[in-house]
Image (cartoon, rainbow, N blue to C red; front, side):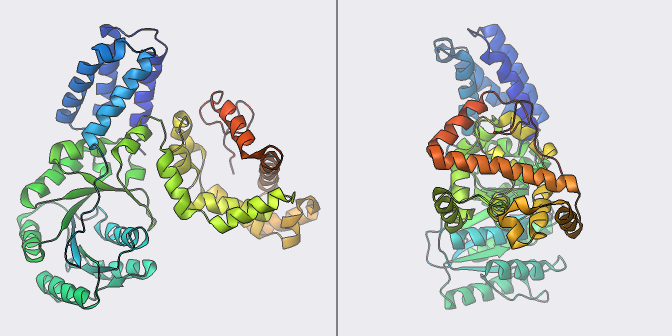
Length: 466
């Protein structure tokens, strides 16, 4: 996420951190680099101008010159200003109203409104324990209503059965009555979009807004459109009293212009950020965490929260008990760990949130294809249970059978076995010296790693390829 911006800024900061002192001259050089990086990231010019002025005013003053580590102090200034630009804190949904609280979802066609509506429903159901009903008021896009129904069935929430022959006002009226009858906490209304802003669309959605008087009106926008996203959000905000913005497709946005422009241009907070196609790919937007990720400092809090939600705790506890009893870490356990990593969005997503892994995570997407892990899982699935529990049984004929069954090569299987051995060694360290010893070892490696190197691999070692 925002890889290009992270790469450019890290290059600038590397030049500064080696300096014993910072002068007005080299600060201005650094600011020119930061300005160029922001403009190349498609951040709006007006936002860049204000950003650079603020950082410059603080950097040439006492705040940096008196610091023992002026390079790091400059980075902290940039981080603080990024947080200010994107909003000081996460802006939560305001659902304080007589149930059902109505949330109106607006945006252009193709921005991901319908998917975002379902993702938000899942988030409200699982995190806030809300009873949610969905309704589609989009009578123009073919299969829009059916798409919302399909997504609703996946997350097991109520959806109002609207018809394309009905008027949008009639649909939302009926849905609101149904939601009240069923004692729903929240009604999410997915509205129609267009390929561009037009008067008919604005008139229709304004009419819906007046009729429903929603507690929240969220504008969904594709972050990959850069500063155009901020300009479109402003146009909607001028016609509609928006309460917040949802940035979608952020995982595919290498620039980051939308995230840094929307709040400043619209005056409305970014409340959520979409980070993938999966139904759980929606996160609350925390400016401080996003700023840390942009600057390559990781996002430990989000990583911990994700682990708490997506890691199978019972399976993890069984593995810990097994290791403590001195039992071997077998291929069935290895397969379980691969599953857990996939549940958390894959290796690149995990590395993106780990502190100190900035340079490493930048190359992760090109070096690691998460389909590798599905291939590894297919290899393990082609083994018998006895072979998984005792990999030493794998002779030549068994290996040929397994690779033929999984559609892979012998070298793929050998590579998997090698990685399994490395994991076994790590598990032994956990048993003999505890988790703390293992983490100390990884901590020592972190400072020595180059781009693309994996903790536990020899210097110069890269991500495994399949």
